[in-house]
Image 1 (cartoon, rainbow, N blue to C red):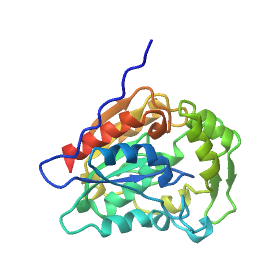
Image 2 (cartoon, rainbow, N blue to C red; image 1 turned 90 degrees about the horizontal axis):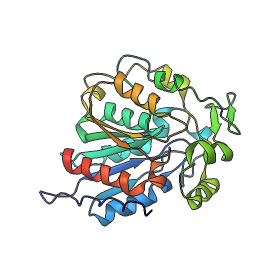
Image 3 (cartoon, rainbow, N blue to C red; image 1 turned 135 degrees about the vertical axis):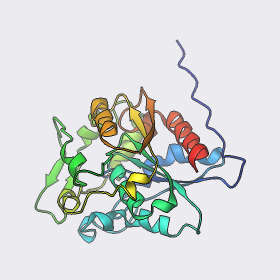
Image 4 (cartoon, rainbow, N blue to C red; image 1 turned 45 degrees about the vertical axis):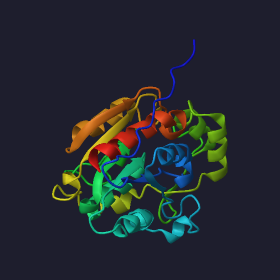
Length: 267
C-alpha cells in the first residue's frame, strides 16, 4: 500500500510582506537540524531563519563561554531586537528550544506574533522556570553523559539515546548527520530556577501554539499534553501523529505545513 502524499505547504500570505519565521533548535543540536523544513518553507515564499544558539551548531563558542541561559539564548534575543519597528516574527522552539522562545517572548512580547512549541518544554507563569524541565522523567538516558561539575552543568546526548529515543522514525542519513554535529550543551536548571517565573503581563500574553508529536519517545505525548494543560495562552494544539521527537526529520512536510499556516494566521 502506498503512503499518503505529503501535505502542500501553504504559500506566504499575499496580503502583505511574508511573515518572518525564526526556528530554534533543542539541546545539542543547531540550526542545521531545520534544513528540510527551512527548504520547504522558503520554497513556499516564507522568510525563514534557523539560528545557532550560543555554543551550538556552527557557533564558535564553547559551553564554558556561555555560563547562563540568557547567554545561551542571546542569538535569538538579538535577532528579535534587530527586527524593524512594527515587525513581528513567529518563533518556533523544538524540545529545549521551548525555553528559549519563552525567554524571548518574555523579553520582547511586542515582537512575537506567535510562539510555536514543537514537542517542547512549555513553561507556565506560576512555577519556577526550571519546573517543566525538572518534572520530565526520562526512564533511561542510556549512553548520555551528564557532568554536574562542569560550569555550567553539561549534558552530551549519547548516540544510542539519540537513535532510539529521538530519531527512531527519522531517516538514517539525518541520524548520521546528528552523529557528526551533536555538541555538548546544558539545561541550565539551577540558573533558570533562580529566575522569577515568567510573567502573565509579558510571556503570558503571547499567543502560543503547541505541536504534539505522537511517537516521541523522549517527551511522551501524555507529558506534552500535561504541559499544555498547565499553561495559559495556548490558542491552538496541532498534532503530527507519526512524528518522533525530531519531527523536522521524520515528518518535515507536515511540520512545515503547520508552521506556514500558523505564520499566515497570526503574523
